[in-house]
Length: 80
Image (cartoon, rainbow, N blue to C red; front, side):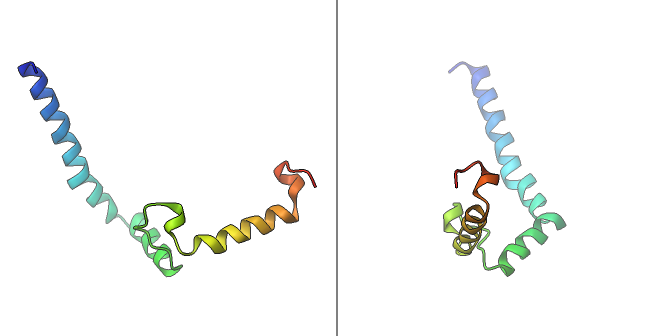
């Protein structure tokens, strides 16, 4: 690797580290993020879950969506 390439690579890594270790943690303490986090916790949803299906409360919500679709299939572009 060319010496200037090493400096560019290092600068990119440092930039990613600053965003990951400084910017994102500071943003997480902003009221709009902490309020949303608390709201999810109160609803029984783990905000740290990695996938949509990891959330325990998702299945109730999915059933609600399925019911609304069944009630008005035409509005969703589905045949009766």
